[in-house]
Length: 204
Image (cartoon, rainbow, N blue to C red; front, side, top):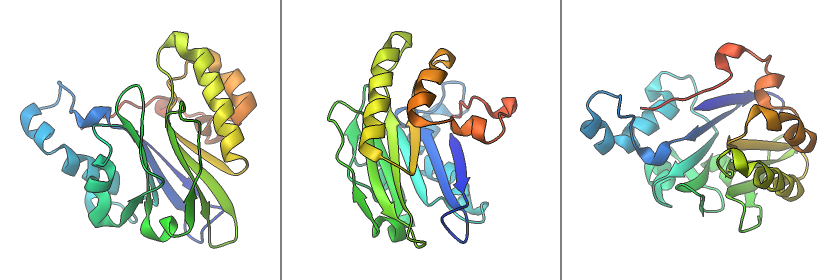
């Protein structure tokens, strides 16, 4: 799970969480596997929202590998989130992009190539800035590098300027330069390249 805050668009930071939830299946190393599998929606919701520990829940939630199309909506609807432009099927599960209702009212979906496993929308922020936000699950495996490059080019062409691109890109380090030439610097690098946070592999 990854999170980020954008401070230039709101009087308070715009809070974002992106998570490949692995089809809502807990790790086999986790205790009480059967119980955690049954309670997966609640556990995922509590992890993302902080179960009351966070000062403010995220404004945007990007999910990858949802087990079925309406999983994100069902899991977060009571907390005031709306799916932005529907879900799309990837090579493993579904991709979803959820917005707080206040943001969703100022958003419109972006039409994407049907071969691109992404959901995207444009959001008009209170300061008159418009941003594009996407949730993606790009092609897997090392041999998918060429496909990922084309997918990133497609995203760039579809989303335009002021992009916040979220998701599981399945990239290898050898792809950094080519992808950054298209999309710009990776957020981890822009945040200071802290090696303790370079890779995340969270489960519930």
